[in-house]
Each structure stands twice: as structure tokens, then as C-alpha cells.
Amino acid sequence: RDDGLRIVTVRIPSEKKVYMRFTARAGSAYDPEHKQGLHHYFEHLAFKGTKNRTIDDLNTFRTRHILSAGASTRRMHTQYSGETIHSEWRALADYLSDIYCHSIFPADEIEREKEVVCNEIARDWDQDNYVAFCALWQNLWKENPLRRHGVGTFEGVRNVTQEDICTVNEIWHKPQNTIVAAV
View 1 (cartoon, rainbow, N blue to C red):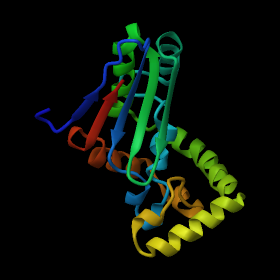
View 2 (tube, helix red, strand yellow):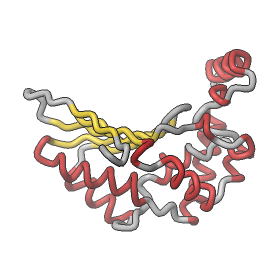
View 3 (tube, rainbow, N blue to C red):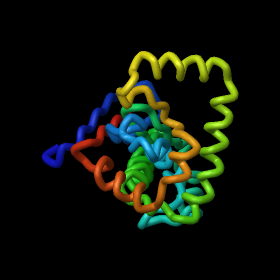
View 4 (cartoon, rainbow, N blue to C red):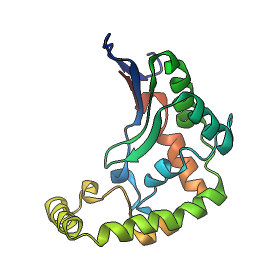
């Protein structure tokens, strides 16, 4: 589109469900060194309220119209996705675009999610294969931000503020840096 948004659609006539994904082309590799885990917050705060819907409104809407919804963070992107029956595709598009464009990132939810994210970090570091994989990436990439994993570090996660999240959201979650895919 003229505003830079990329929309990719594929129609499969025999399919009765619709899968949709909104992707921001920025992830953990874009985290500041002292705030590793910042982009990870987007997946944790995705369903915590928007300018148009409260947490309860989002949950009720999802229960009525959407089969599944989720968010994830990778090195180079952050995504919000969902699946619904074909006749509800507009509801899914509305739901995901509201989350992508209008999330409010409540301060109390940020504080609550810090413990959750730190538990994820501890869980990952308790797995030998994860530790080995991290060592490999650290040695392969040395100074390159691609060495970072989406979950973050304890210190980085604790340093993240609501202002940080809002600033990063304004920088990266905009049409020219977004791809929407629907099947």
C-alpha cells in the first residue's frame, strides 16, 4: 500500500479456516544491550488491553469469534497471529489489527509480566541444549545482535519500562515495517 504496509494473501478454496499474522520486522536483535528482553514484552502484553478494548473485552471477543490467537518474538521479528472459521475473517482482522495498532501496555501488567518473563529465562537456562545453543550463537556471532535470544536477560527484563515499550512500539510497529499475511 502507499503507506508501506505489505499484505500477502493466499486463497485455498477447500480450506474452511483463516489464519492471519501481523508481523513487525523487529525482534530481540533490536533490544538495547542493557534492556535485552524488551521486544519479548510485546508478546506478553499483546492481549492486555487496547485503546478500544479492555482485557475482558479482548477475552470475550476472542472466545466468541476466534479459534486461537497468540504472539511470539524472534530475533528479527515480533508477530501476532490468530485462526478462525472463514466467515469470521473480518473479526480476526479487526482483533489482530486492534492489538497491533492500539495496545496500551498497562504499567501494572508490565510489572506483573516481569516475573513471568524471568521464569521463562530461568526455564530456558535450565535446559542443557539451550545453554549449548546459546554458547554456539555467542561464538558464531560475537558482537552481532543476532546472538541474542528473544526471551532476554534477567537484568534486561527488569530494566524495561512502559516508556521503553511505548517508544519501541512507535518506532517499529508502523505500516512501513509491517507485513500482514492471511491464508
